[in-house]
Length: 325
Image: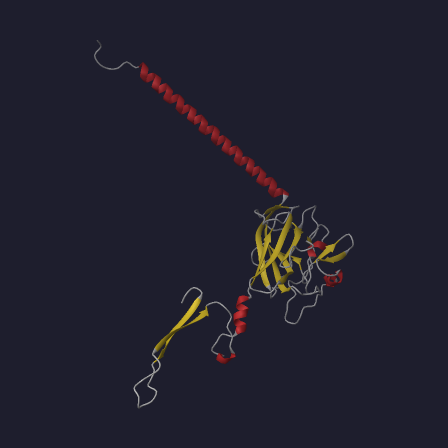
């Protein structure tokens, strides 16, 4: 056994016999022929002749076709992942969904649905639906939102969208998690109501598709984007968010787990004006405290230096004990 090969070895032995029983001669010699058979340790093997003891070819293929879905926050120019997960109301979440398909035919990625929750548990309350109905960015329909997909997409296995930062109403926690249902299809897939990425355009009161015509987004209004039998549409209904003096808040909704792969990002810490002010006050208080500590330590050092200097001076002035000459 080697890292790459399974080697089977044997010897083929030949012992000649005399041509006839009446003679004791031979015209051939004995021979030993070594034989080695090399079998690659990695690869797909199929043979109907040895079924059912051999692993079916389809099983091996399926194990090689694993798809890795991911969701991450990006910088404003989409050039790199965002290092900080702290946001202020008025900021924008730049979200990138991506697909890694090793040893697989080219695929195209779709975001069927996305939901925001205050905890990692996607079944927790409160929750707010950002994307629904197989690619309708419903958050963009809110009056105080400019959320939209980025068009054109950078490459088939990536899909990017922007969401105006928000926080939950009457929630003690300012953090939230975004979980999305991601789905991969063959890159030859024609855009249709089940395979789409649609943004709402307020200026024209219409929907725009990243790929394909705007007609495929019509079901975003009817909220009835039909799914094949046995496939879920994502997370329930769309919930409207009340206006709040420039602050974006999210109400409660309902969750239904999609059968496709889920990916999440968080916790995102979204600060309001009151929290920013509180943090600023705490920060200034901490600075003042350290200034006082520094001044106190410096004063103590000065006092100790003075005491030591005074002690040395008194020691020099003292007369030594003993007999005077």
